[in-house]
Image 1 (spheres, rainbow, N blue to C red):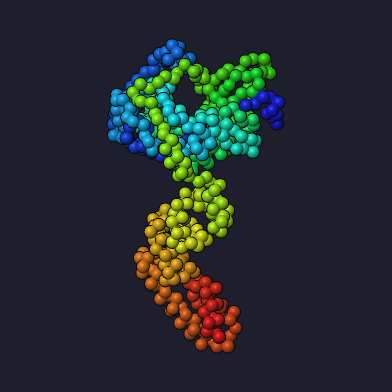
Image 2: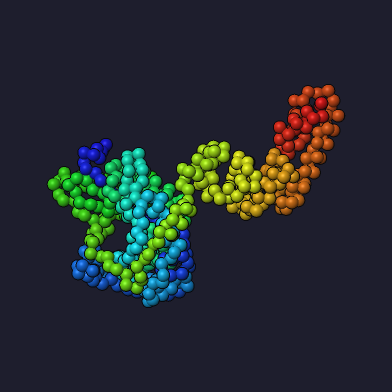
Length: 480
């Protein structure tokens, strides 16, 4: 069924949570996830209390009434801050700098002074019962094919504990994730179709990946707030797989429409996105009575000097990087490989040494794969032998004309076989001189043949040890 999004009054907004690649936000513990046995386990229960407004949050009361027990696994990489047995330390300035970069790349206005807040958490994922969060910027935008999408707010906050096991009356969490710096980006409800929802999510994701963020499963979580005319807002959790984004939006629209068709009010609730693009009920939507100031930390001051410093060192976005690589002479496929394999910085270093982008991309990406296949070894093994320092040495040797470009792959194969880089270069030069002598001998023994006939004899003799182009150069040299 084709959906007319304008006719049904569709509107939606994204909420994206991205972990930053630094130590934890309010202590010096490393942001390391553990899979070994914990040192100890502590247990807690949720007790619903009134927020700053004097009201008890509806979601907090819902969870409290269930009387669940929460267990927290601890390690030697967690501390008393995560256990809520010690006040938070000063805010992580490295995480703040990255958040400022993200804010500026999203065209936001940064607050010069802002209050760190406590947000009531109702599912037991924080030992304290609240999450520390601070509003850093707002009022930005991104451009999409469907027009501008406003960036409502950017928060810097601490991630929750990691759920390990859930039962009807208890949940086990691991404290390794609790406190990892997390940037939260909320868009305005400007998204007008399932296609635009996906486009905006990918665009923001691209901007995030240009900064120091963590990569891999679980490091980014996306939620979608969605409604149609006449229905209440529904929040969809786990909305991060691009393959099912459009399908999930379409399914939710049809679900909400079915309530309206039956003249029933659609409940305002939090739902979970399932792998097939459908959703399931999680809990009621939290109310607004769950934020209050953090009394253990001072007001955060963000100076104009710091903002200007961050502006001067903003990272380049993917489009800018791609354009620069195209100007270097690389095709789209090679650019895609460099970025996908996260080898842009290595490429730049090698480019400084040699300045031949096509050769560098072969040495960095293609030759190692071909050698791995030939030697029946993993790419990781080959790249460990052909380290960045080895590649720098080889490209420098080409630049200084100690070896020819045509010989690089053969030299790399020798290094993989156990020959040192210096020895491999030396042997390659000697091998080529030896090849010249052998070709000259073939020509003398079979005089009077054409260049192509000699080519056939040479290629048969050397069985891939010399390229056809190099063989013809030597043959022509002796036929003159």
